[in-house]
Each structure stands twice: as structure tokens, then as C-alpha cells.
Amino acid sequence: MSFFNSIGRTMQRSGPRGGPKRSPTPTSTISTTSTLVDHVPPASPSVSVPGTQKPLYLCSPFVEAALVKGNFKTIVMLPKYVDIMEWVAVNIFDFFQNLNMFYGVISECCTQHSCPTMSAGATLNYTWINQDRKSVQLPAPTYIDYVMTWVQNLLDDENTFPTKSGQDFPASFPSTIKHVYRQLLRVFAHIYHAHYPQILHLRSEPHFNSLFAHFLAFGREYELLDIKDVRGASNAPAVGIGALWERWREMGILES
Image (cartoon, rainbow, N blue to C red; front, side, top):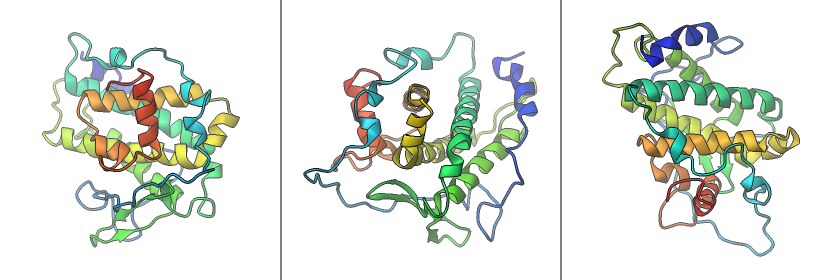
């Protein structure tokens, strides 16, 4: 029995997220070909303003808080005798489960009133492409609910995440996973931007930082994450999680 098959029963027991599953848009069902093909509108370069307060997650001691010391390269390497597709699938499952738990804890603070847009910084809002191929703004809790429900449905789909011995991963698996990665990155980015004080209140910053650093290192190791999705345009100053990425690289947590 393969490594991924050995956790199949665990995945099957997990079941869907709590509450009824909802359509990703008011007018359509979710699919990787129509409703999740979204983009980030061009943002104007960030300008440093004297007296502007740096985000808490970039400040000491919070930026250094971690459960894992050293470079994350060592824990993302492919183990011997494990198929790379299964290794990616297992890690995607773990990233999703952990991120879903973190968001569940702070979700009461993420409301349509407090987070009317899916923002990850003063100059960065994520938009959604609906079935009519139109870019729409969604409140952050709605956007995140659509993303997490979509990913859970993929995990439950044997045609995408096979759990039976001898069943191959589909040819579309790599492209699907890249799309999943981009969407989960946006959930991380919103939590850092809008809800890091709640993470600090729970004294969970070492756990959340380590989860995100692991997520970034794994995504870069297996080419699931484009650097532009993390830090934005290369000719503009990094903002939000892009600045965090660069800070962790300077600290030796992530690869240069």
C-alpha cells in the first residue's frame, strides 16, 4: 500500500467542512475552469510614508516566532520510495486541514462588515471571476468560504485525489494543485493582513508562522507557487506577505 493510500481512510473520515456546501458564485457551481480563474488587479507601488507603522507580523519578536528552527528546505524534500504525486497530495491535504482550523478559530472576527473585500494589503485586493468571466469583489468571508469548500470537494473527489491502490492521479493534477496553492496562499495573506492580532491573542504565532513558512518552502520546491504570487511585481517594493517572504529569506528560514 502506498504512502498516500495509507492515509486514504483518514481523508475519507474527514468529510466535508461543517455546514451546508454552497455554490462558489451566486449563479454557478464551482469548477476549476470557470469560477476559480481569477486574478490580482495591478496595484500601484507601495510608497513608504514617514511614521507608517509596520505590520505586526514583520516586527520582532513575532517575525522570528517559529516551532521549527533552521531552513525549511530539509523538511520538504521528497522521502525515499515515495511517489512525488502522492507526496504533494499528502502535503496539500495537511496544509488545507491546518489552515482551515486556523481560519475556523478566527472566523468570527472575519465578517462582511470587518472585511468587505478580500484584502491582503493596503494596495492589494483579490477579485473573483464568475461564470460570466467578470471580475467581482467579494467579502473576505465569502471568498474564503468558496475557496475552502472547493478544496474540500477536491479532496473528497476520488478522480482528483485517488485513495485506492492502483488508481492513478489524473493528468490535470499538477495544474489543479497549482490553482489550489494560489487560492490557499490568498487565505494565508488575508489572515496575516487582517487577523494577525487575533493570532497573537491566541499565542499561536509560532504555529501559524511555521505553517506558512512550510507552505512557502514546499510550494517553491515543487514549483507550485510563482514568486510573483507571493511578492507581486519584481520591479515594485514587496508588500504584505511578500515582505514577510523576503524577511524570512534574510533570516535563512527560506531558500534564496
